[in-house]
Length: 128
Image: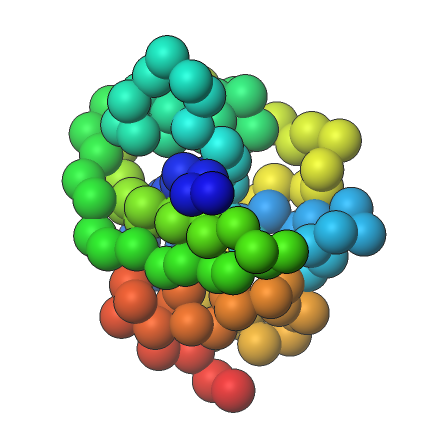
């Protein structure tokens, strides 16, 4: 089975929005995002997921690539998006704390699975 998901990198200068997940299934830094629901496009799903997880409404979004995982025989295809324009007030959720971090400070945190590979797709260089 193919499961479609999304993630979005939100930039504010040298700062990026990350989610410091506390859930046991994927702990550490990651980007906001989630599964594409049955009756929505991938684009609609990233707008919805970012709003649900962060309280921010994305105003301009572009796709930048993808990453995939094989989990329990299923292929998880994650479409990666990026935005620098948004409105609203940042809020965290029950999956973890949402916060803007300077790119140079990323290495001070635990990364979730493959977060380093995701950053590479975005061309983000950080100190390892």
